[in-house]
Image 1 (cartoon, rainbow, N blue to C red):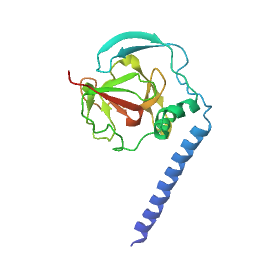
Image 2 (cartoon, helix red, strand yellow):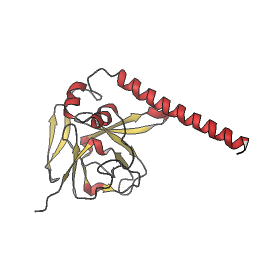
Image 3 (cartoon, rainbow, N blue to C red):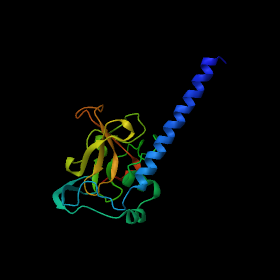
Image 4 (tube, helix red, strand yellow):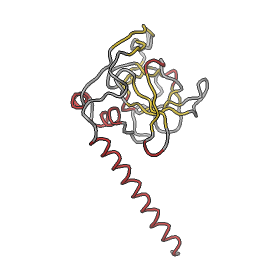
Length: 195
């Protein structure tokens, strides 16, 4: 093995190790500095569009936000669901239950049940996460700039409970050109029953 190849391997391994350490440190600090209550977008009332489980649009309603302490969220969510939705973690690509789901149905927030996406807007992005070209109603999700990991992304959250869902990118298909890249752990799928 040449000296150049050996140095490349050593520096490459050191760089990867340092990146892993920084990501772990960032995650540990984010978790340690949390105050126990999850309120990102304020505590005021929000307007959402209600949907039946079959995806039928019902009404536009003004409702109170769902606000719980971290300990209360932990009681109702699995450990991985908590980390993704309440701590903005990300599941591994191709590991989620819905990345390959092509059944017709409705995707609701795993935390509060708010309707988020319809299978009618789902597409195969090849990224390993469930991807949609639009939410079921723009009122039901919110976005904000996310600068974690040193890059600018647009985080998508549930407007009703502030659950982290994933990120939206501008490389999706028509008609919107958007790709809502969501975590399966943040979603609960309700298959559309045949009548």
